Length: 392
Image 1: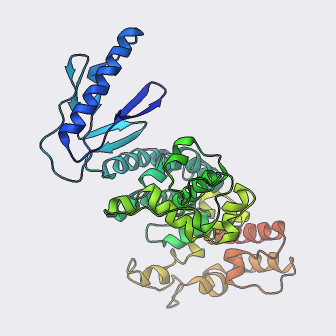
Image 2: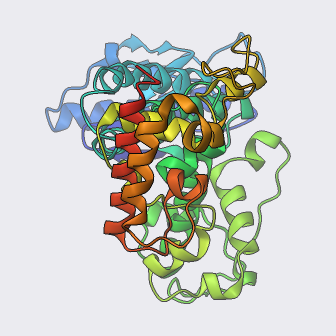
């Protein structure tokens, strides 16, 4: 039996599996000999020194296959980069994930240098365009890695969210994702896997993907395979295989409701499975960058003395005016240090004929009001923050 061959541009690979090492060695050497004869016939030279062999197994095996190509013995390596992925002999994704995390953190350095120079909207676009793709390359392939490994890319995204929003390190994950409107990377990988399954069901996926999905009936058309009983969940002896793309994707697909699986387009399908996203109002990006960050920190109670005291960051919750608690309400409505700035704040707000002026309105606006009204509210609040000189 010939080995499985995969070709991609100038990269190609031979694959063979067996419980018998001698069988693997014999078949691969036979195929390498055929490949050598073909290359001699067509005058196409390969480079044996760049050709590597990897023996994938969860077992510690000191006996490796002896493979020869064009007179040279091929080096058996524990890790090999193939099509941008680092493939480890023990089927672990730790090295690859560490590499993309390290690369992404270096890119975050540039984002951090721009933190106070450009606005939130542009910082977010830079992250989405230049950093997140690094964290998501071939993510449906390595999504079954350990929980420890999946948390590493998420930490990169959370750090990017803190740069974009200006929120401190102790801000919650929920506040960061609420402010940015980003999905967690885990959710995005789930959406990518289900979208791939949707394409397979519609027959728009590559043939090599159609071949690996286990249909329940061999005569089913690819254009009519959206019913729940069309896919087998493969039997998995190892947890490693159970978490890999095919078993996990098939299982998750079968759990979708019929309405979602029968979506008429890929866009409507994605809308049905994206349920945990919160789009922040556009006016959250309004204003000077530094004042915008102060406003955001006020929104999540992580800048005034009372808030910091509860987190054991400051020694006292007192305001400089002598009040025992410098909280949001005191800052906007009561502190005698800012009486003149406060009068100006409320005089401007009263001109907008607002029904109720409270801390929620000052910090979050009101989505039921026109966009320009919310921008005006934020403009007045930003002027108040600036005039108090509290955060200079």
